[in-house]
Image (cartoon, rainbow, N blue to C red; front, side, top):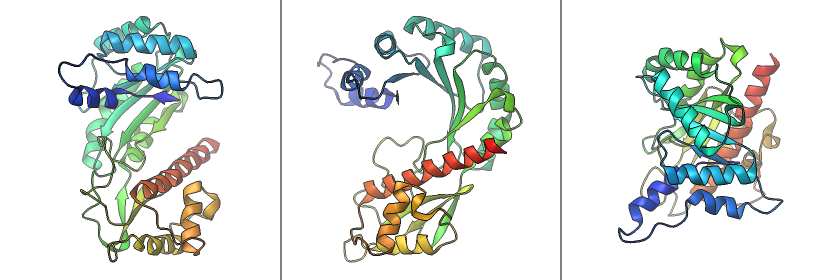
Length: 298
């Protein structure tokens, strides 16, 4: 289980009183919770320019769990300086006591909202992967995300199509180099830079579902009826009847089973924003995994 505590560290720095003594690094707390034999092992996530206390915590956890680390390296349209980046990566891994062969790399292109963003990244990502994949990583993944920060503007009975631009980026850069085995990564059905609850609006959001279908997401968003969320039951019925419902139906994922149960009237509980996100995420993960498996089989 890769654990990226950087958002939590930023939250603690912003909300901790100035005179309060800093507590243990959040990564150590997570690792302590996962110390039981049946708990998942913890893979610390490292960011460039991480301070010494963070690297010290990562070294402790890596030594205790013995599953290496994951390096999350951001890339933008300006690309990466090869010499400086290689020096920084080697120094970080040396500090935490983990060799390249026990480290995973995620090259993170961040938010790609449109085709222009993808075009601006193609050349720099391709150049970076050319030399990054020459290093003896355990694995390399290209990640990005294009889901909008808010679905507030999507209204009406029809499902709105939201392109998954990260798929276009990965296909264009990575498929031509199958020998590099660059994996696909995304931010699921949330905006890459959102760290709070993905409601899209203050307070309770209108009933909506973010549903992965091919190279798009389909977003159903219906108005709330009489201050309750029963409109989500209508969404479930419309999804199941739509051409975007998978041929594997409710067996596709746990999330699809929940949608089908509500479509068939097995339960009339519409859930809430947290559950809608969980059901959509469950469907997304299974859909992406199946598509990648099919691509490898071909």
